[in-house]
Length: 239
Image (cartoon, rainbow, N blue to C red; front, side):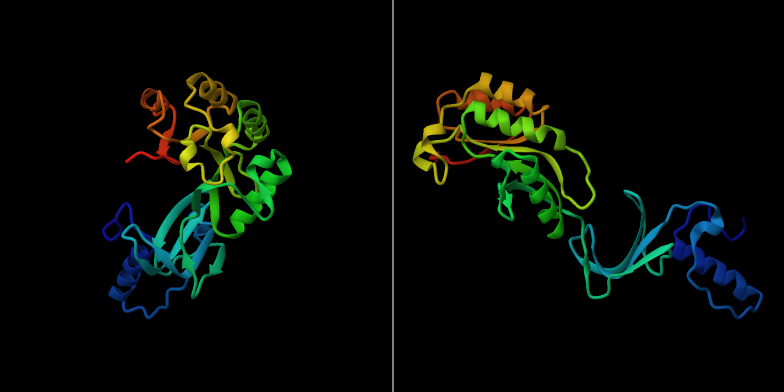
């Protein structure tokens, strides 16, 4: 109790123990060991020697220890039951892609479970761990089918796949003059009742809505929609 604080990092603990041993003239080399000796398995894996992306937006060579979904410690000379050597690698959080229509030959709007799985598997291979499936301008029946198919995947964590966190509803509330690749026949003015039905059908998982704010009724629509999800300006002639 004289030397040990109640809470300390692993690095601090090693330093304190070494100082105590030095008081008794003990020549000892402290080595990395499993924390199981403390009967508390709170570190199971350590990524060592990597360039870690920090909260200061800088890369620093540090170890990171974690168990399950929880980061337990960040520092030097951390220990664990499993060790991954990340020398010459960058260690960063998983990317979140909020606007992606498809990948690897599959499209979110293809309206099939296989296509969602294909997209999710490809994304995680590129470092993306969460994404919003992005739609195109379609009519309500088509969007309803897409949302119904996607519904079981929302926020479902599947090994080896990025997690589908919801929908980026891109369209159909656009300015036809700025349709881009969107099909003009599906582009309509903002329709609140339509959006409400789709929002509920998605399990309230529309996370982002894209709209042209100069359209008739758009401002009132945006005020309502912003209470349910994020709203983004898109395909617009607004100045």
